Structure formats: C-alpha cells, structure tokens
Image (cartoon, rainbow, N blue to C red; front, side, top):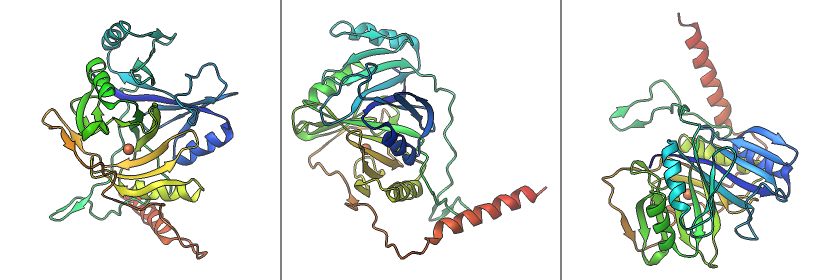
Length: 328
Ligand SMILES: [Fe+2]
C-alpha cells in the first residue's frame, strides 16, 4: 500500500475571519475562498479546509469542544484505493464522492477519507547544509533566519482514541500502516504509513475521557532555524504557545506547539527520525513527551529595539545574491 501522505484535514469554524488570520499567520498559502469556506495549502500542496461550522459539507464533530472534522490520506494508485474501499465496505458504511474520494469512519469513530493523490509531482525545497565537526558543508553562507515559517508538509496527525490496541489493529490490518513504537499498557502507539517513512505519521493516545478527539497536527519545516523563527513570528502575532520550543526524545524532532482555536494544537517540527523495514519497535515504559522544552514559549524582552539578527541575515543574503548575479 503506497501512501503519499496527508492530503487534507478539515475544520469547522465559527469565525472565518479568525480562521483566515490563524492559518495565514501559521505560514499557509490561501488558495481558495468562498462565502462559507477557506482553503489553504502547505508547500507540498496538501490542504487545510475550513468551512462555516453550519456547513452540511462538513463531517460531524468528534467532540463538542473541537471543530476538527476529518482527515484525508492520499494513495499513489487507484487500484489500492479500490482494494481498501472494497475491504472497508465489508463492515462499515463507505461512501464515494463525485471526485472519487472514499469516506468512512475508523474503529474509533474518526472520519477518514482516501483518495488518489494529485501531488506526486511536488518536490521539496533544498535546505541549507549543516556544518558538523570535520564536515563543513556550508561555506561562506549563513544559516537562514526566518521571518515566518512556510511549512512544507503535514507530517503527522495525532488523536486521542478510546482504545489504542483496537485503533492500532485497525490502521495496521485494514489500512496497511506499520508499527514504529508503543508505550506500554496501551498508553500510546506510534504508526507510520509506509515501511520507509518518518518515525510516525499517526500517533494514537489513550483518551482520558474515553472519546476520540484530535490532539494535534504537525507541520514539518526545513530546519531548527525555521522552528524557532516561525514560532517566534507566530507568537509575536499573538497566538498562544501550548508548549515549546523543545525536543522530543521519541523521533528526535525539535518542536513548538501552539493552541489551535479550531481544536487541539498545531505543531512546527523538523528533523524527525526516518525509519525503514530494519527498524525494531520499542515498548517505552515512560511516557516522556519531551527531552526538554520551554513551557510557555520564548519570552522576549520588549526594550523597544529591533532584534538585529533578521535584518543582518537579510542584508548578507542580499549581498550574496547581488554578487552572484554580477559574476559572469
Ligand atoms: Fe507531534
């Protein structure tokens, strides 16, 4: 089963103006707007869809406190989509829409759809090389300083579920996902959508209230500079930190989470572990969310002076480009 990744996630909204500001500040590109809808996309063209919460086009709410509605997984091939739809239809309602998207509910009640991805042509941006001891790959170049994040992809989605064992079984046996790691006692399970993939693309946590609910959606950015720069910029727009920045012990990623007014939270992350068929799943005894983190974001002292790093970086890059274009 070859998945391309998350095609879309959808939310309801009681305040489309706020939704537009939130996702624009997050660094998404607005690619569509209707009377009661907004469409945003990330660098790899997967989408965040927002509709007025009264819209009949939305899936129902999973939880009264959250406007999350559904997520869509993209497949490479039509025949895989048809095989999955045929299997799922044996024990649940499966509906195919006019665009060929197949809709159903997973065993936890979460609304999911499958489609053949239209994003196969999209290539990721080239990052700037890192300098390591004995390996200086970035020469006569500064590392970028980001005035705002531009997330490349939605790398993982995380839910509370009533029973992680049942949910794990559904995604592995019915949708072809792979096990990466678990917390003992059914506290949580990390899954990925391919043998060779990021450490987790779907993380399922035992629900404290027995109900399914979105926990967070994670947006991958290029490097730690973009996690920090993007997080600072988003924070400076007035959006509240949930937790971070910090570093996860599982997946090794840097992160920064923010509260999402549509429910759950929203995460910038970078540099996740990438695992293959050689990976051996672990049973972690301690549910340790972070190796370290700042609990409330980075507090900045407002001394009325502009922070110099961004201006300096822009100036250096401008000179570099200028010199490059002058060189015959
Ligand atoms: Fe995450």
